[in-house]
Length: 122
Length: 503
Image 1 (tube, rainbow over the protein chains, first blue to last red):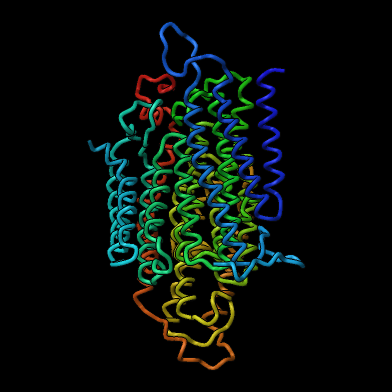
Image 2: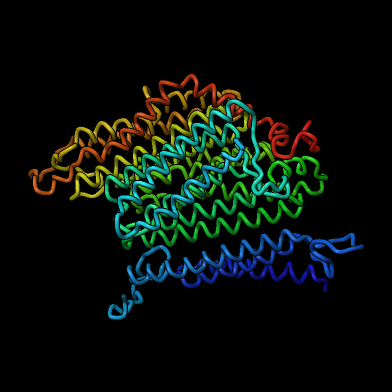
């Protein structure tokens, strides 16, 4: 089995799981889904410089084939941004749960809503 | 040296935003003064840059002096200068409004967030690099999350969670599109990508189209085109109206990104998909305006409709239609912002009823507000005497050569009627019908005339745009010509000896 197939199928599985979870009704699975999607994107961006083995990124004497260093820089930026965004989404979901008493994304309280502990709320 | 001025619209809000952080608790008026002063400075800078853009062609400034396409470039041309000026004028009015009405004192971080929002928007308009565009999109989105939640409240939080999730998924799509485009062209610089995309072997065209469509989908999400408009009414309807007034430029960021990338890199086939989406969004927006029960919802749907009208003109990717769109773009932004500011004043001066469209007893400042509301309604619906009429006329005229001319004319005229009916109904209910309850003088004293100044300033700007319609259309024409002159853009960024520059 080739390395391309492994990476591609890993991206596909992560994306599928991410989309499924992002379409759920409650905030926790949605946040998990967003995290899965961002992992999939990081892998994808990493792979756009083509999958190569044992090649120097910038300069080495007597070498003509190089690995592409740019996707790695892009992945680094994307990781930082998606990490911060996931943290923000978690905090927002928590605040929204504490203020509205429901963790439904569309804010509609179900018949038996999970009540937050009023005593423990800040 | 003078080229370095191109970076100033990024540096000024960045420093001002950091400086306002120092005055969060004590002497808050200094922070507010810095914020409003920075917005006024941006107006001045944008005017200087616009003069520069008129005098010469596109100018590129290489950040850190790394030559394109390896480093990141900022590109100033007529389109970027126009968008910068529009952002600065809008930012100035909204900063003044927020300070005068005390919105900035409802939380700790209004002014820093506001400045970083301006930084992100200006950066998106100036950058000549696709990944840098993504980064500036994130900057403006992160600031907008904070601004949107400013003042808090349960309803705002629920809407905020949705807004953040939708935009995170949008960012994901943006990255996929960037990955695809980099994978086939091997560059992220827009000018370089334009050259390489034109020289691609036919086997790679499918991937280029897929990447391009994904990118346009992300921009359409920002511009709230059908069927990607569902997030907007709830977000704009639950945030503070002054913040929503600033967000009127955010939908135009999506429109700008489409104008910038599509003629340069992908070509006009994108329009075949964009035009039906814009037509449907225009209809949905103005029908929603007619059906809205709150003033803020009404304004949000009006914003969807007017942005879609703009995209109907853009999606034809024709020089005359683009010129019409570029004249209509500042008008629709200012009109929507004026409507949101007016609604904020209605909510403040008529405290008991919130923003619901119900008959009320008389309140102080009603006459002034009804005048502002009338002007905003006239502007948003595109009636004479304000510039929206000229803009819509230009769009209709430019659409005569389009194969969809019947649909465009029918929908633009029909939705204008819907807008007139909807806004007239809301205006008469709020300002003319007297409620059955007796006038309660106690809670009707919220009126402060000075709070209406920024709204009148925006109205005056619309007046200027109407009176100066001649020079403005000439500017829009020249901008449109410059947009479709791809080799000039490539020459400006990559130098005159680049391959493809002489194309």
